[in-house]
Image (cartoon, rainbow, N blue to C red; front, side, top):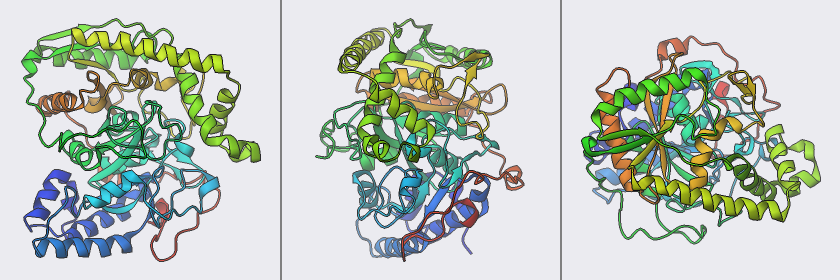
Length: 507
């Protein structure tokens, strides 16, 4: 009988056990499938699956281990792929009714690299329609519930990946990030989401290849697992003009960080972001708990006064590039978030675009100046505790109406504009006993040092009850009867012979 609790071990530990013949990839996959069948109906994190195909790959992975063949970094590790990434033979819907029957003929670069490193794709993870917004719900698959309370949202757009990791459905999951889509769900589910520097991990699906705001990146239950996936995917590829050669396995070892010498700058709101009063106090308490262990911990002041308008324009450009044809055919075929972003962009002018590109450069330069005095910049990852997934987006903070459906993502998208690498670390709980995410931002292109700092902070947090990563109550979750598929219109079609059951109720 397989040990179904084996899934609770870290990806790094599981890979080591496979490499030393102490764990069969088949046994691990069976344990993951059992956990998915047990818990996924309660959170709806995993969507289309391909278990039989994965079992065949796991058997071949086991044979390679027993034969003493060379093994990849991720050999035998099951992985969930965000449903924005194309997977050969496995349904890829982008959370949109337009693509409910889309079965790609090939893997995109990210997925191909994960497979080449030995990962076994077990299924896809849920997203908002076209990745628009930070609430992972759509009319194809339904909503992803937060593992700590499935009535609440899991964030987005990598919400399915974050929820799957938090409940140990899979040891690894992929993500991507424009305005915070790696960091926000990681914060809301109590896992790690790393937004790498643009180009570090090539993204084939960007239509605007030269934009630095959209990246793909890893998620994990801890920093080491996140780095393991990063190592398998980083490096130049001709499909992404911002990618660049690394000259070896740059992240095989992280720099050792002495916390006592670390200079931290922090901000509650970057001067422009609406943040719930309670979250501000939670963040102050976290900073007070961290500050005795570092050399400097001081509040920063950086001019981000035009960040909202700048992000509006640059984000809208990508929606115009991606959805003009669909909008012209039938505007009603797009969901409200996607359509709103397209219409916003379509009304803009060349002057708007030129101004936004120029302002982003000014923001970049002002932000980099902070790192003359500080090694890291800390902030909350999200401005509120998780809200109900039944609300498509957050409409107000502290009783004040927000300008649009994504303005509540400002704490992360201001960092996106600066282009610095950034990671959300689990940092205890908030005032509602939900996971609290600490956004840790490093210097320009200093991904390795940032990850080293994150590992050192994580080690500190592990020894502190106020800062330690929270875990969901799985027994309580099993008793949940929340209907997460109430917004599904009709079930998607599956690929023949390769993808099997799909959607939370059927997995």
